Image (cartoon, rainbow, N blue to C red):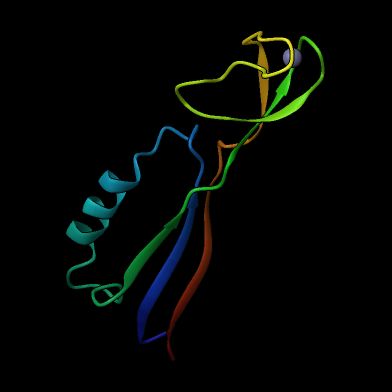
Length: 92
Ligand SMILES: [Zn+2]
């Protein structure tokens, strides 16, 4: 690949990665590489949780992780920890 024009990432809300900081870091490190003209797109999927109290699956928010059915906050994360490269587009 001669140059990359677009990179799409998927960053879970519970991954510990802050999208704005990642954008800033990407801009800083891409100079002088095949990523120099690449745009970065970050998708943030919904936070899907599994309640260990009542086995309900629900969408959580970082500031409200309680199960809407039993109101407990004991959960397993089904989706929200990922940090994936979804696609890379470029010119050969
Ligand atoms: Zn519950």
